[in-house]
Length: 443
Image (cartoon, rainbow, N blue to C red; front, top):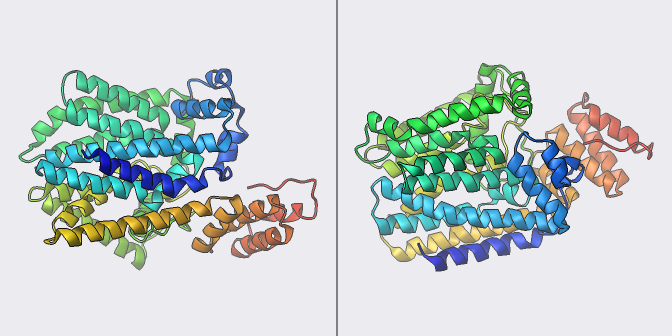
């Protein structure tokens, strides 16, 4: 692996993210960190154990007691993203070699994949948005578990993989997709049979069952699961997630159109647009299956985002249909496909030029996206431009403006929220607080 190439990628990441280091806390940061006494000291954290996302909260405690302020929180997030970029390079090389690619070609494609992973603007929600650390922290251990499995698939390697898997769960429960990812990798090995795949992965599935049963004994996990199952029916959620996955794979992934609160409504019945999205997704999966034996790197790369999105975009309903940070690990598969495709060009000069142009575009959009995070007003103004039909977005913009002292701007935003949804209670209450300064607004 080229140390110089990874160093160049790291410098590009720092250049794209450092100017947002002192940006304000945003949205969930206030409830999760600033106004949450459970992460303001080691004893307070311990008193809440066992609890949900214990490792994540432990890192928040470390940041809070350090006294480094918002810059300290973001420094940790950027450091995690840099570590994950290096892990992506190593993991992808191992995966591509396992699917039959020569070492040199696998290494080059892995470096391209790492660069795309590092600089894609969708990653800002897991890096600049401090609460997005749940994803990047989980990803560190998720990728480490993948690397251990690829290097040490048997013996003590299995125990280490399970241990790192559990640590990833302690950062964010979405890590439960790891057995799906490893099973897909094993199935993509040339000449692999299902008996071989089962023998290489059955132990991890048993670990998943044990982790699931253990999580059910912790109220912090059990209660959100119960509320999730009450959000919408299974059929409605599957329809909704067809729309959610189609959105993620087109708008933020391919078109680089990011939003911290996309305007996606739950789907309750089939529509022509939803049918087109479903058929397109099925076509992608069909291509993956057709290429599985001929070009396993392509088949696995196409299946990868579907496997990694199982945690957030499958059977478990969520209040928000989709968020950019769900792509943090999911975009790795498409990234390595792009890396291999560039190598397939006959002209090395053309391939290098296209790779450089793509990196510049991603760097520019990521740097621009980081400017949106500088203040809560700028973030929600950008979100209102991308999701103008969502009442919650306008209420949050009104809240940010009101907090910043822009009363008339806040009034206009609250009124816009109520024009979209006359039943938006928060927007109506917040509008009333403009004429009663002693009453604080609500997000």
